[in-house]
Image (cartoon, rainbow, N blue to C red; front, side, top):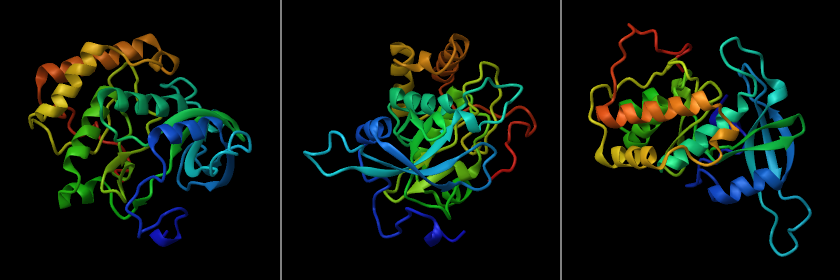
Length: 260
C-alpha cells in the first residue's frame, strides 16, 4: 500500500501525534470509538479506530480526536505458551517504557470498545517506508533504537520484527506490537542484534539503575502476574550489572519470522 493511501498519514506534518501522551490516555479511556477498518496481515484482530471525546464534558473546549489501534481481547487466537488477554501486555510495555524514562512506545491504555475490552494505542503518523533495517543502515534514531532494544531485553519481547520500529514525523522512533512480551521464561526473538557487546550508554544505564532501585511501576500488577514482574526486574538487574548489550548465543534461533 502506498504511503499516501494509508489513513491518517500526513507526510507534510512534523508531528507523530496531535495530542500529548496524557491527553491521549485520557481520550482513549473516556472517548467514543469508531472503527475505520482492520489492519492487514495481523494474526489477531487489530483495528484502526478514531477516538473522539464523548458529548459529555466538552462544552468548555473543542472536542478532541485521534486515530488509534484497538486490539480487543475477543479477537485473540489462543496460544499454548501465553495466557489470554495479550492486549494487557501492550499496555504493560507502555507503562514499562514510561517508568524507565524512555518515551519510545506510543501512548497505550486499556479501554472498552465496540468488541469489548482491549488495548488502545495511539496511531503513529510515520514514514512507513522505513523500518529497523533501513533506519540502522542510515544511522537514523540510533539512541531510540538502542532504548527499544534494551526495553525488549527487559520485557522479553518474543516478536520484534523490523517493521515494528516506526519513524515518526517528529523524527523519533516508536516501537509497536508487544502482545507477545513479558513471559517469565526467556523467549527473546528480535532483529535488533547490531548493538551486541556495545557498552550501554551511560544515560540509559542510569535510567535502568533508577528503575531497578524504584521497583516495579504502579499498575503493572494489574497487567502481569507476579512471576512475570519478578522476571522483568531480574532482567533489568542483569543488564545493569553487565553494562553492555548481550550476545545472541543461539545460532540465530532468537530471530522472529518474518523478519520485517
